[in-house]
Length: 143
Image (cartoon, rainbow, N blue to C red; front, side, top):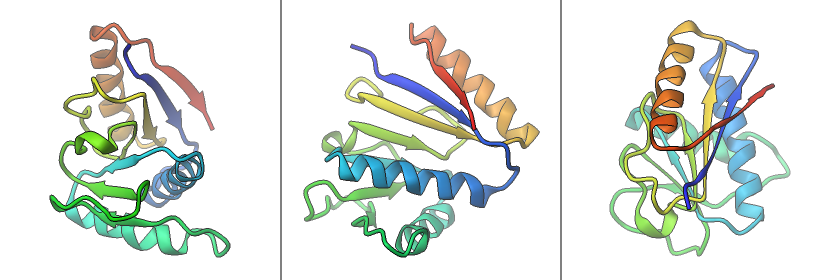
């Protein structure tokens, strides 16, 4: 069964807004017990997400780490990286990169985050069309 793909189009034009929304999605997935991977476009963005997951909400605790070929010890810790998600962590993918995740056959849900930046929207349209070629009809949510 193909994954459910949800595009979230944020009203802001900031990388920080997309990252903060990714933190909220990651927190929700963690609380539901899903193994979650945040795909970033660069190691710098992965490090920003790593810091932000500690501080985005004072009452929140989301165990997480940057993935570097070693799986986390915590059963459903959120992992962050620039490459394909390792097999146990493919259930929920949050995509902050500009390309589609590589192998989505094991994923149950993919969250694509866009903002009002024209470059972001163009890259998002490409990913949307790519999912359609795979027989997936993404849902779009304007936030």
